[in-house]
Every structure is written in structure tokens, then in C-alpha cells.
Image: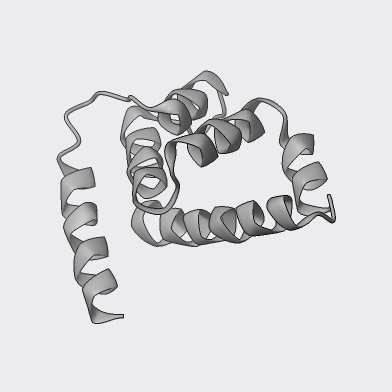
Length: 102
């Protein structure tokens, strides 16, 4: 737990000096979604949270939720073990993202 908090703190510091670039599937999807709150700083931070909590395949899958939020609902309700395991990782990403970027 302490190790995770230290790592989270380090990532918050890195996010603060993000350099104005957005990369990664989740960060790029965040920017492309063209939501009012989207910014380079926020989307970079969300990508950092994704990099911390999701593997590359999960990041690609999560990125699709920005364009089509219904896919998230469908995944959550899918009822198969693969989707349930992904959803648990996605919830961890969501909580980490809120803690780091919220």
C-alpha cells in the first residue's frame, strides 16, 4: 500500500510537468473525444494513470469508451469472466485517474 502511494505521488509530480504533449491510446482518445473539460494536461494525466494500471491491450479497449460510452456499459454488463476481469482493472484505472487527475 505504501509503495503504491509513493508511486502515485511520483506520478502526480510528473503529471504537473507534463510538457504539453499527449500520447498513448487513452490520452489521444481523451483529446479526440472533444469534451469540454478535456485539456492537454488532463488527458496526459489520464494516460499516465492508464499506463500505471492497464496493459496495452486494456488501454486500447478503454480508449474506445471515450468515443462510445455505451461500450463501457456493455462491457460492465457482459457477464463473462474475461469482461469481468477487464472491468476490475478498468475500475482500478478509473480510481487512480480520479486520484491523480481529479
